[in-house]
Amino acid sequence: MKFIARILLMVVIVSSFSSFASEPVRVWKNTEGKEVQARLLSRTDDTVTIMLTNGRSFILPISSLSEEDKSYLEQKEAPPVRGPEDGWYVNAEDAKEAAEAARRPVLLLFTGSDWCGYCIRLENNVLSTSAWDSFAEENLVLLKVDFPRRKNLSKRQLQENRALQSTYGIRGYPTLVLTDADGTKLTQFGYGGESPKDFIEKVRRAFP
Image (tube, rainbow, N blue to C red; front, side):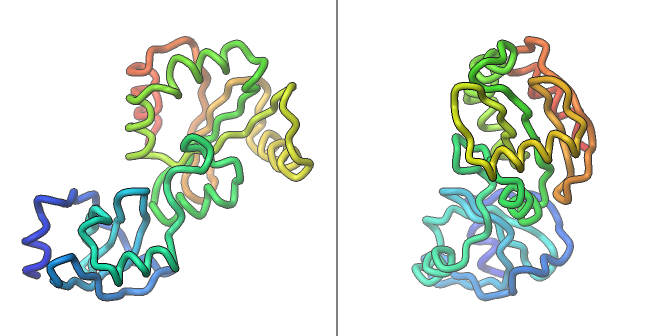
């Protein structure tokens, strides 16, 4: 395990996970040629999370990996924890896959992004801040369920959003629903004008 000792300054131990069946155990190498056996859990634009055979997980900078590992990531990526639209997913299945891979909860935002006053305040005062962005990237998979009035959604997207609205019994906007990776509802809350710090704490308290 000399490889792990050499990279302790570059990694963050995030947790212990049970077996992650969808990705095989393979040999990972750093730029110095040191090796470790691990499976892929998740990745961001700059880092990759791997789980060792003993169940311990590490976050590694992608820049520290061998060219072979970088090629592997390009060919078979775990879903990124950040969605494609400013960090948000808009497709529920994609968000679920990312949450299952990263073993994170999903935060669904039911919003009327271009007409709902409190939705716009939430976006401008909280969701567009660096504090929220950092918190969400480290803890959540985000799914936006939008019901705009001036922007046209595809028929498929509108059907999916309405189905989610029905599933979780949403009656007003903005409503936020925290679920586990399987979609089981953990809690539901709204936005009352909180500061970014207070809103982040509200979300944190909802974690199981």
